[in-house]
Every structure is written in structure tokens, then in C-alpha cells.
Length: 115
Length: 111
Image (cartoon, rainbow over all chains, first blue to last red; front, side):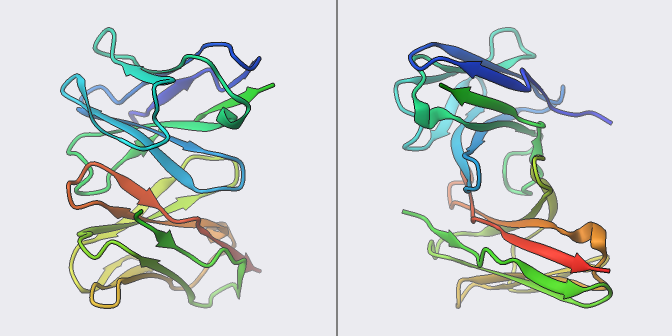
């Protein structure tokens, strides 16, 4: 069964360092998302991406964050200068039809720990 | 600020009972509503979605929507220990671009 894959599963970094989280969405999907979940808290929307551009972003997604689909298969989230409060599980998700059906397929997540 | 509220629980029910999970939302313009299940340390997985007022059934699960009261619920019949998880309510904004999640209700089904 097709699945969304994310790497790394866990990354530990020092505050101020750049981090890139990678995702391979399901191959025929057109809509891509990043969400994050701080331990014990809500799943929070970061950004949605369609047709090679950002379609929506939340207040969390400030200038420190960027997304890219560099090669037609990978979908990356870059955090330029990590802060302690960026420590969270980051989930990539993809969908074939947008959010209308809610049929988002989530990856298993990348846990980011900022020291 | 669009809010989605859920009782954090835990909600404890015996095996075989009906579990009732509730959710309220603040954005009256919301059109689509979703229930996800999240096992500890895992990613959310979609259980079902509902657009129209009333009930929608899928196996042991029934979603109920009341847009006038801005209220959506999930009933799980014949609860099983494997249903023990956190259930996340999610609401789609009117533009269809952003899914806002509630904090989740932890369900515990006791054998």
C-alpha cells in the first residue's frame, strides 16, 4: 500500500542550526502539507502546497520556515535557524483531491529535538 | 482565531459499550468535519468525515453533525480495547486549505 515516508525519524540539533526534514508523498498526490505536534499538544497546521506554490500558511510558518519540492518527488521543510520551541514531531501529509474529503495520508513523522 | 475544542479525557468505557466523543468549533463558516485516530507516538489516521447535518455511519462508527450548534460527535459502538487511542476532531476552513485540529480526547476501553 502506498505511503508517505519521512526522514529522518529523529533529529537532534543545536539551537540556531538549520534543519531540513524530508518527505516523499504518495506518487500521484497533488496536495502536500506540513503539520507539527509539540509533545502533549494539538496537531498544528503549518503550510499547504499545491501546483508548486504555497496555498496557505499559518502564523507559525514565519520567515524561518520554507518548503520546497525540488525534484517532483521529495517535499522538504527547512527551518533556517532552529529555536528551542521548534522541538516537536513534524508530520508531512499528502492528498489526491485537496482537503475536501479529509483524505490526508500522514507520514510517521520526524521528531525534532532542539538543544 | 478558529478554535476546535474537545474534552481531553480520558474517557473510560468498558469493552462492548458505546463511546461518545464530542467536539465544538468556532468558525460558523466551516463546511467539512473529520475524525482522526492517533495512537500514542503515531501519526493521525482518518476514520471518517461528514459534511451534512445529521448522522453518517461507517461500520461501528457514527459521526453526527449539528451546524446550528457548531457541534460534531463520534459514536463508537461495541468498543474494543484496540479502539483505545486519542481521537482528534478536525475542521476544514471555508477556503478548503487548512485543517484545524482539536486537542483530542483520549479514549480508554477496558476489557
